[in-house]
Structure formats: structure tokens, C-alpha cells
Length: 451
Picture 1 (cartoon, rainbow, N blue to C red):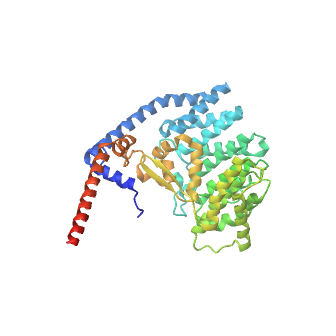
Picture 2: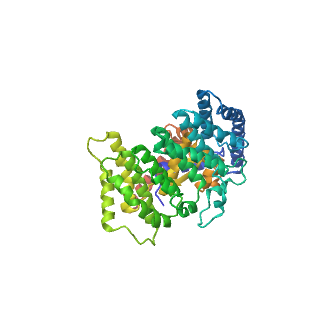
Picture 3: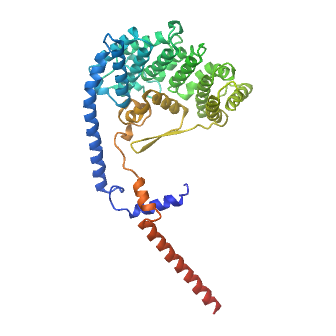
């Protein structure tokens, strides 16, 4: 057990002397916590009622002739779906929302297409993956993400999903001659849809022409480094669903050398190298967890990879900006520790007083992608979005209920820990009394010995 600091010990002593005003676990506190939770829930419901009419208006605007009006509707939908979990609001409006967003892609500018793609991804995360025959397959212990959607009012059909994916694939293709921003957003949104729709069985059993991982892999050699970078990140995002055993037996032989070539190449951008390095770290995270793995990586190949990773972690020279060099070095140092030492970084997220810890490359990559999509609404979705809770296996924590604080507030710290506070004055007097008593005892003992 780690040793407590003086400050922590002092705070514990203060806590033990505090009156029962909401900082202890008495029955009164349960009532207070319940009242706070009820007030919070009622406020949220009132807010959702206000959003309902705005959300309906935004969906109607998607069919307007004016491009500016359609874009306004898309942006309003994005804002609402990011900051609130609106599965109930989509009930009865899903067909209109999907069809309207697809229509915007056909008519609109690049800005309109990018906004529509974000709407696709947010709809998928909100209502969950589409329901199809493949969901009946359960060949592995992990459940399909689609299991979490049953019982919801709004459910994404296979037709909805396929229509959105066709639009995204068409715009991601280099032959479409779309802008970099459009192609990147199309790949990212497609990865979100495939992640929400797929199970491990889909990623492992589907043949090359239909395999989702292979689809993203074809973009690794794209002429645009940013597009290639997003493609690798999307591939790694989907690969997190594959059990470690199959990552090692299927993905390592198929992908590791291609990723190494990207890292070694002097012509690739730092962002592309970082994406490739993270994918390598994901694969080695699986290798390190698989005790039965009979390495098919030769010693020379492994040493060559480690050397390439270390070179990327100590990048120097004037060809790259200082900021890009710093970002690449920082990222590759964490990748190298996984490849060489088997160590994996961790991240924490505080939701309603609960600390969620992410300690594997699988969960770190998934968290990064949902954070990229939801931005400031990530905590809201962790609290109420059953799909996100299912993905991160936190549905049992009841994250929608705020937990009472176990720490002193800033006001309490100022009142109790200030040098001039009554508590500190009393504490100092007690210490002085004990010091004097001990000094008297020592003096009396020495006098007795002299006699």
C-alpha cells in the first residue's frame, strides 16, 4: 500500500471531525444525493424537451433548396447529437434524418458533405449498429455491439446503414477527385459505422473482397499522406475488435512489414508515421498478451523494427518543424516501450465521480476515436449512451448518477487548511502541549537517573 503524505493524513483527520453535512455516508447523505440526482435528471429532461423541436426543425431543413439552410440544419444536428444522447428524439425521424443527410451529399459543397458524414457517424453511435443476420453468430466470447440496441425506440436498419456506407465509400475513393477533407472525413465516418455494425466474426470470417480491414488497407499507399494516415487509424480502430489470438495469427503476418516500411520511409509525413507506429504498438500489445504465440517474426526483422521505431522516437534535422518533431518523438517513445518492454500507457476519465481507467491499446484507440467524434459531449455519452457503455463495459456503473465527492472542496480546504484557521490553531496548540509534556518527561527521567 502506498505511503500517505502528511497532507493526505491531515485531510483524513479533518474529514473525521467534519459535521454530517453531506461528506459522510449517513442515511441523510443518501437522501441528499438522491435529491441532487433527481434535480439533475429533471433539468436534463426539460432541456431535452426544448431540443426536440429544434432537432425536428434541423431535420426538415435538410431538404431545403438553399445550401446555406441545409448546412445550418446539418450543423445543428451535429451540435445536438454531440452534446446530448438523443436516441429518443430520433424515434420516428430516423428515415428522414438519413435520407436528408444523403440528399445533402448529392447536392452540396465539400463543407456540406463533411457535415453530412459527421451526421452519419453520430446517428450510428446514438442508435447503435444495424441489425442483420450475422448478429446471430457468436463464435467468440465477446458479444456483438449490436446486442446493445435491442429494445431501443430507434434502430438502424441494414438498408439505412448500406446507403450511408455507399455514399462514404464513393467519396473516399481517389477517383472521386474529392478534396482531402472530404475523403478523410468519409474514411473516418465509415470506420465509425463499420465499428458499430461489425462483430469480431465479421472482421475475421469475411473474404478479401468484403473484408472491412482490407478495405481500409488499400488506402495505406494513397498519394495523400493525410488520407493514408486516416486509413491506418481507421484500420487500427476496427482491429481493436479482433481478439488478440487472431491479431497475432492474421494481422501481424499481413500488416506488420507494410507498417514498418511506412515508418522507415523518409518521404512519409510525421502524421503518417505516428499512425503506423500506433498500429504497430496495437499489434505488439496483442503479441505480448498472447503467451502461446510462437513468434513468426525473425530476430533480424524484430531488431530492424525496433531500430526504425527508435529512430522515429529521436527524430532530428531541419526537414520537419519543431512542433511536428516534438509530437513524433513523444508518440514513438510510448510505442517503443510497448514493442521493446511490453509496457502500455494508460489514460483516465472521470465520469460522475467514477474514474474510468483505459489500460490497453485497444481501449486507448477506441477512446481516441470516440473523443474525436463526440468532442465536448464525450462525458454526456458515457453517462447516458448505452452503446458507448457497452463498448467500454461500464454499463454496470450507473454513470448517469453523480457520486458524492470524497474530497474537500476548495472552500473547505481554505477554511480548514489555512494557517490562520481555527483547526490549524487548535492543532498547533495540541502539538505544543504534547511537545512540552514530552520535554518534561525527558527532564524528569534524567533527574531521576542522576539521583
